[in-house]
Length: 335
Image (cartoon, rainbow, N blue to C red; front, side):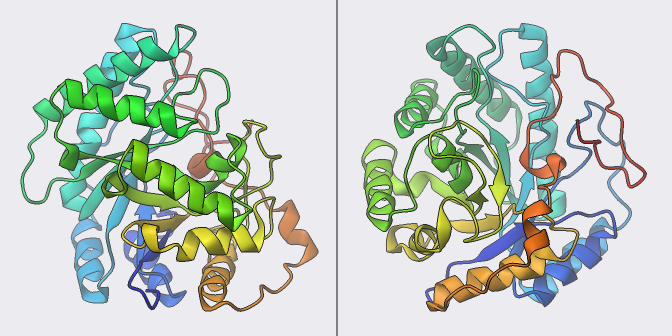
């Protein structure tokens, strides 16, 4: 936890054990974590909860970790043009929201989605209608998770690459009677950069915060995916980089990390090599940024570490994919 109380987590794999992931996050100085509740690139959901789930929940409480976030399956697209796939996506999202309390998760994070060749207005209307339908079917009890919609870098037909588009989604949800408390927003810094927001400049970070508050309201901001970028500004590319080592750089990342208007949001790292030791390296770099310390140079091989596709990139087209090929460790194969 930073001195001002803001909490820092990371998306950590569960392949080596659920409890081990919690203990790893705590050991490297993090306050929480983001996880997948199931295979992120398969429609099929497990019939029974993981056997380790009670121990996972207990360890979270013992170590004071939270708020836990579940990153929804990448197949979910509530804005698409195929009504069957939209309905299937809604069913999967409902499942993610229903299992979240068992994981102790306060957030279920999904991408805003793609309108699939129609137009932004149609995609926004479809997204809002499906969110309203799903939330009407999912109990809103004291342990219910908040749905958190994530901005995009702007590639293809993706929705939500601008603050104005996100505000349009929020307005469409309100028109359908969706309570503000049930839907929040996640800003991914690498996506902001890819969409053309020059947040390498602290003055631009200030402007983004002011505009977000004006258009949407900072009370709607629940999560920040804290990622540097390997992409060019405005390229619409989504390529995550180690903290302070990419195009955004240390000054911009520090401005996002320490901005007083963002202190209520929870930060989650989705940086490369999280299962190769770079989780600890990036966690330490976050703490250095917060303390105003200069960042150490990364080893040359760090630039060759690839971001996990299963954590930071869209899954194969759901119109042609059901159960994807996986590697020997159960992770989606890179294309």
